[in-house]
Structure formats: structure tokens, C-alpha cells
Image (cartoon, rainbow, N blue to C red):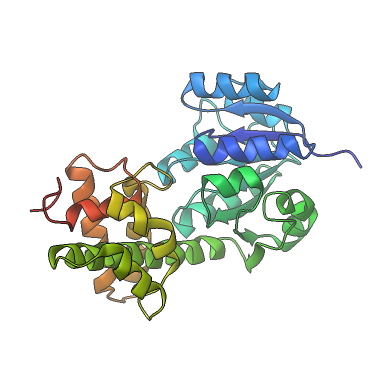
Length: 300
């Protein structure tokens, strides 16, 4: 069976590695696009595909187009800019939208795609750069079930042969769950930073403290991924503080709509906003420890 031609819009760390993975398993990546032309040109050269300068050209060159953009504004722009957008000539095409966005944005895109005779599916990702490259992303998908079933074989190549993929329901549902995932992750990250910061201030042996955390109720996946980085001040970016702030704010918007107060999520959001104001927004989320350890740049 002939494999679908793939287009990629947004070739940052995640989008580029998803493109590499799909190329590796035999899918023709025919077109790439990014607001940074140099990044798109470099990836196109690497993959033997074409760097398109227009969004409509990506749609024309591909059967399935993945979008991996920065925020809601960027997502709406690529689908509705009157001068150039992905829905020009999009009848019969499928769009897989991977960014963490407000559920309403995904629902708007789904309506616009349907009006253009195309299909749109959410494929929200709860993993990072290494998983994108290895094809082991955790994917939360939402939208039309028949569309999901039709492109499952393709998405399976990004999610450990489908073992790490779940269908969540109609448009907007995956975005809701992804907002909750990132909200809880960000709270856990902030909590660990405070625990380790206080342990350091008390003069405790930090490796020993982390060993105790790992064997008790203080354990979490964040301890494994971020604990050493917090102690060693190694904040190479896998998921930036700026994105953490954006995603926490999405969850808070959902809470406001539900008339629910989330004091921990609110406090965490304020910490990440503080990082941005201090010029630390491009650090990995583990950089929140810079706000909690004595003697570090962000500590008041």
C-alpha cells in the first residue's frame, strides 16, 4: 500500500524530529515549512524534501500535514490567514495538529477544515524531543473517529507502534487532557524545586535527599527527569519555562470557565511568569529551581 505523503508545518525541536522519524520508517516527507526559512531549508536538505515558502504549497504537496506550532495565534494563522493558509485547495487532505492549545482553538480548526472538505485531528503529545525522534511519543488524539482510524497506522509510527496512543473523543477532548497533564507536571516540577531548594538551605546531602524522595511519597517522574538537573543547574531546554507558563495558563482558563479555583496551578503559573520576566524563559522547566535555591539568579 502506498504511504501517504507527509507535510510538516513547524520544524522546531519536536516537528523536525517527527519528520526525521517518519522519513526513517518510509514515509515520503515531501514538504516542510517554518516561519524561520533557514530552519526549514536545513531540514528539507537533510530529508530530501522541499522547503515551501507558502502554506498552500505544503497542502498541495502532501496528503497528511502535521502542524507543530507555538501557540493558539500561530495555529489559527496557518489555517485562516486570508493571504495564504493550509486550507487553500485542501479538499481530501488530513491535518494532524500537535501543539498544546486551547480546546476551542482545536475545535475552530476542525470546523474550518470540514468546511474546506478536509479533516483535522488533534494529536497532543505528552513527551519530549528524544521520544519524537525515537517514535515513542505518547499521543492523545481527538476528532472524528473515522479519521483517527484511517491514519492510525501513520500515527502508530510515532507512538511505539500505537502502544502509546489513545483516542480521547470529539474535537477538543485531547486538548483538555493535555492541559491537565501539563498543569500537573508543572506543579510537580515547582514542588520538587522547592523541596530541593529547602533541602539545600538546610545543608542536607542532596543526592541522599533525592534517594529518600524516590522511595517515598515524594517520588515522581519529575524527580527522575529533572532532579539532577535542578541540583547541577543543567537546564538545557527540552520543554521551556515559557511553554510551561503558556500551558499552565491554558489549564487556568479552563478552570475559570468551569468556575473552579486552582491555587496550586495559579502559584505555579506565577513562578513560570517570573522566570520569563527575569530572562529565564528559554531555560528548561527545571530552571524553576533557579527561583528556589539560595544564591541563584532568580531568588529574591
